[in-house]
Length: 318
Image 1: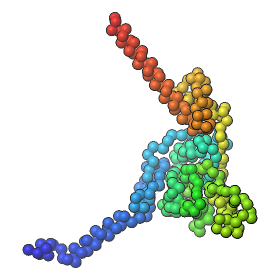
Image 2: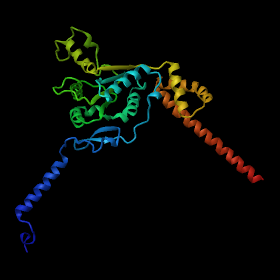
Image 3: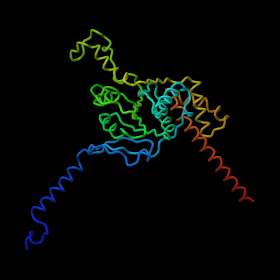
Image 4: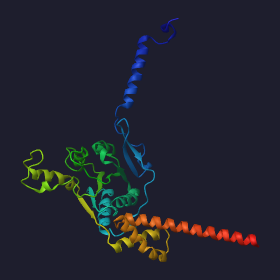
């Protein structure tokens, strides 16, 4: 009995089926348009990620690190500027894109996270985008345009090397694209550099020709600082003094339940901790406090275990 006599489909129908199956396989590996999440209230923060097939997705961040504005010490001026700008944004008033620059570990990222927690009940949402994915910024903005929520596009530790494609994508989103800016989107970026491209001594030599015979080197310098200038608000952070560092250490130890006497006793050890790391910052203070509190807890547990063993020994003797 032949195949044609046993199959309920004609050769043409079988050919069409195979063609459809082939098209489905091809479509599964082709890049797809970015899809909006089914529910923007599923999380307050989202992370843009690229799949192996090149498709971008917005993944909810289920556990955003807790942080409140009152937790952040010694950056009152910076905190006031960022909080004011964010409040204007969520209330529908005009606000600026923000570039936070300066010393590492001084609270740049923590301040953005604290603002997210503070204003999430008013509809603020955050989308974290890695530098390597900045070329997809127009797609992300299109997905959220028209939504009632307010969105911060967050880029952490932002800087570029010569020729990176994300540089021009960021410039266009900030200011310069033919399309109008979306009123429910702002960009908040942190960086250790105020100017986001590397600068060289030769850039400042007005008569020095560039490597490829650049005859207008001044324009090269203008190009390198043009991205930073498109952020409407610049906020700078500075290293902590010793007293400021110790004050933050005390604040974190207190938050972890340490009594005042222990906080004072921990000060010399906190200074050694900072010296070993070559930095006095809020991040270093937090790391010390966690280490100190953890060691203290273990010591209490050990003393309790010793006391329990001693009690058992006394009971056995009795």
